Image 1 (cartoon, rainbow, N blue to C red):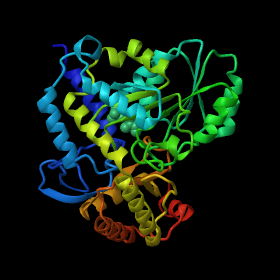
Image 2: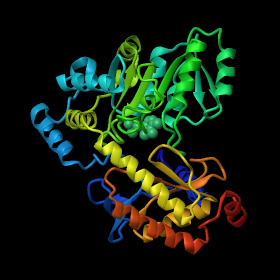
Image 3: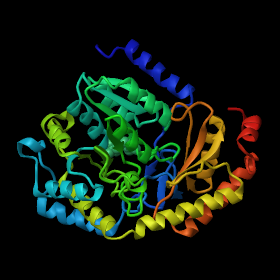
Image 4: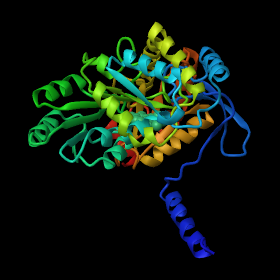
Length: 415
Ligand SMILES: *Cc1c(COP(=O)(O)O)cnc(C)c1O
């Protein structure tokens, strides 16, 4: 027997190790579309509980939007369920090209190529456009999918301290002998909700002859005055060489992603990127839904503006209640607790109070940086946020954390 009792026991011990370290992830089952209020089964087998959702990437509230659902239905009827092929054999429909053109226009780039996910976009893009004569210089807090993509690429791998422009400049000087230098960053960093300094990054790229890559997964659709992203916010639209983003967050929340940027780089992805060549692309039903999403976000800033209002309101509520909140410009609002167990306990109590928010701690964030990450949505109404702050306040009082700053929290609970 290949999977012997000994093998099984060894794997069971691995799992127990994960559980003992407090790192075991248990999933919560939602019995409804994604929305501001959801019906959740947790723990598994228990009765459904209605909670306010403060942890989805449903920034624009489009995941359960009726217009998007209708467009997806229409696409299902007119283009069928699936392609049963990768793009370059017989898996490309007119609507795939249409969505690529729409993304190019929206992101202010030259061309776009769809991928099954942004994880796949990041896995494929570096290897397709760089070789051993090049260097990748990445912010140290980039998303895991970028790190994996860089591992698959033969270019030299280097990094700079998070958002440290002096350090980035040093690295650019150090690597002047390379054929190409690619600066790699997230647009919005998902744990702290802070924005990359893209204006300064572009200036350095121009000074030291480098290209710029930005992953806009937590930005596309809502950051910047018209929601085009971090490059719009920082005034560098048209100056980013490679943008990757996902359709699995603000842009409808189903799945799919893309690489958008310089014409030649996108064409190289079409010729060489392995997740593009060897995996089916986005299903027609999702392409149809996403096309409708892009019409909605291009046609009006209403949702993006409501998200901004909600974010400002929520930050103010947390501040007034006496929580230690990380400041920032994005709808990712981290409530800092520093201690991992405290973050877990607070999240558990919040759930009991009808608020679904997740505690993050090492290794997802650095040691001693535990927090509850809250995320806003245009689907939230003021009454949701008022109810949420009441629950946060109840739990905050229980643990005696209200009004305490960083040092006081660390003194009281440890790191
Ligand atoms: C969520 C996320 C991804 C992955 O997107 P998928 O389309 O779900 O694969 C990639 N990069 C960043 C920065 C993300 O936040």
